[in-house]
Length: 134
Image 1 (cartoon, rainbow, N blue to C red):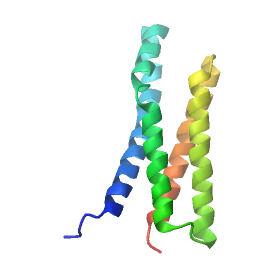
Image 2 (spheres, rainbow, N blue to C red):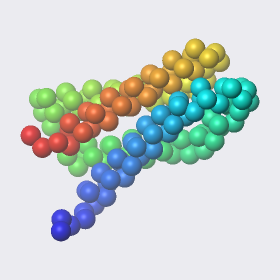
Image 3 (cartoon, one colour):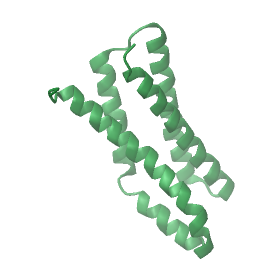
């Protein structure tokens, strides 16, 4: 059996944090249209249930990502370019999530929510590429 190392634990926590970040956005995005039939208050109540710990989840994601970079280095060439684009997408996802939290109109809520999710998915795809051999 392959041994469990601190590296594998760090990467696992990072992947789990990304799963929670992206998965929460997908679940809430799927629930909102269905909940609208029950009124705006129901949508707001559902959204508020996702708020506790959101900053902590993002900190774990960014912290373990930073730990991954420290452990593996910045690399060079295509690896470094991919890493930089991933970091930009993570920042875009976080900024869009922040703007989503402060949005006042349904269009802004939807737009910033979608942007945050798409940027996070893009970052996850690039993370897979960075972790793939070859």
